[in-house]
Image (cartoon, rainbow, N blue to C red; front, side, top):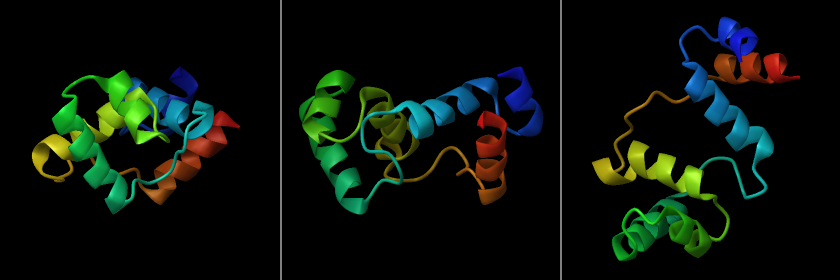
Length: 99
């Protein structure tokens, strides 16, 4: 992680690790969240607050970590982003560092 972090100085090791896990190690659907998924996440969260494993099962195509991260970034704040989205340049550097 140290070598990868060196090429992404504006990202924490934890952020990099989570990005790699989400993009390269998840067997669930990945990629960007759709508006429909955001709505479903809110509905499922309202029914099962903080029960991330159960929420992920109800979502069907997202793992618990992904659901929790999305809720923290968007859901609990009325879909207002807390963290900055990864730039294309950061995505490219991450891909190069991982490969």
